[in-house]
Length: 83
Length: 145
Image (tube, rainbow over all chains, first blue to last red; front, side):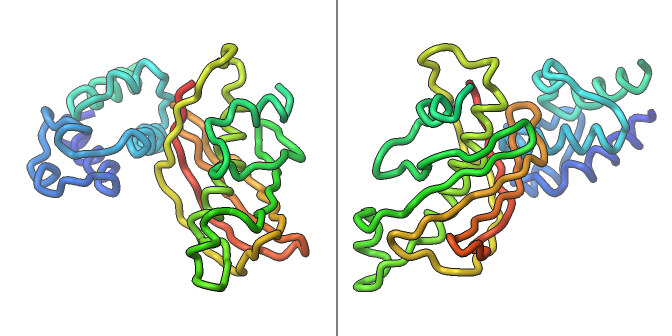
């Protein structure tokens, strides 16, 4: 999936869970879910489940552990979509 | 895992343990009960000369039975002897319908919605002894064994 399209989709998924509006406005590939967006661990799970639904993929514990920022989320989604 | 083993693993004690027993438990949900004793410490202050069980305590009772007991059961394979589960309430959305007085026994019925990546989310309701709906809502929590 194209980078811009993927970021836009992720942004829609993440939006309900963010606590830092400013960091969300400036969202980039380097944005960290916990440090920048102040998302708590329970909502991080919600994001993972929403990503699964949106892209029709299945994520595992190791994916969850790696999914710390927008960049890693994009990489994981793309690798699952290609698999 | 027996229901008494589950209750023994709960990280609470008096005056903040709100589980007396479990009637049924499965991968899909749990039914348990608690009787609010007239000497529970919060009745002194809630309210002045008019003891009523606080909504936060009803929510706590629903979370202890509906999420924590169920969560321990669902994670039973990961439990070692003397293990100490770490738990956190992460969100709840609750509607209340009837008051609960001292000495009332309530039943909590919880249905699992999601249990993944250590997060358990359940649809939980509380009934009084007449079977009337006291409260219902959604509760989520995280658990590490």
